[in-house]
Image (tube, rainbow, N blue to C red; front, side, top):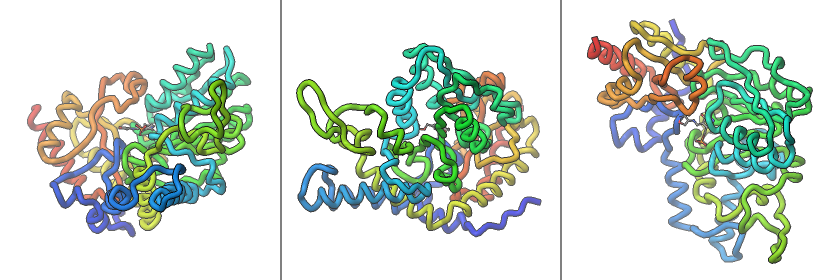
Length: 405
Ligand code: 7TS
């Protein structure tokens, strides 16, 4: 029997999300993007209703208010990650832009021909392609730590060498749900004098991440996967690295002075925030963090562990199901296929029961290639999912099997 007891009451917490009152929806795709609570929506609306203006530019009241709210959001993020130096938090568009920023502003200025970047075979495309592009420009090599068929990484040290200059690894896989031992990766990076980058897109939203304790060099995540609006994400970088790095995008706000033939740069983090940022979205992300803190990240993680165990047990009862990944330490993402039914057909059929699941390659084609499948179905959770919803999913999947008999 799975213990389903938790301090989280998903039925109560669901009431914070307007979408669940407005439509019948079993939403099992939070790894793609989370739903948005009323407090985030109203915080964004309040910005536009009451103090819409640009930041860091003007002395009139509403501009001061906007600047203060934007910078308070940055402070909330630093605190959430247990980071002392607020200037190490850069607002970006999301994980993808955060990783590209490192590839442009650090890698292209610090790597040389034949140097190596190390990633794993279980990365999202956004933690593969930026490095491929950079390696191509520099003549550097992209090396891969393969995953085992249970969705874990074994013996990563084998792939490090004196040439390894940067290692970038996902904290939690968006396909297998595996929570990787990033402490080990960061320790290895230090041993080999390489820069460590953590793709925390699937971890920061779901369990406590203590960046001070991790002591990684960079960490990237997206606001929209953690109750926040789309269009805002974060890059954490060690200030001593950020200080030395070249800017990413050039334009307004990232400068100290501009002459027609040369310019100098603003302090960090603003050196990396060219142009008008996503102000309302950043402030909305601050509201999301307040709510996550109220609910409790440990509690969220424990609840998601329980619903994940319950789902795996329930899915295993279904004939012809194959679940990919079986890591002992995992989060709320489960990927599977059912014999003779294409994952897109599965997603379509459960959609008729108002159940939203993801089907496809999950922006992780190298994983699909190794599993020898073109696509899979995937369910992923947040604290607003109930055990009843899992029963509805399993009934709907059984209906699909009967349809294809
Ligand atoms: N890294 C991981 C591990 C991810 O899961 C995602 C998005 C990204 C990076 C990119 O985040 P973005 O906000 O910049 O797009 N993952 C997914 C997913 O699994 N389904 O849709 C998006």
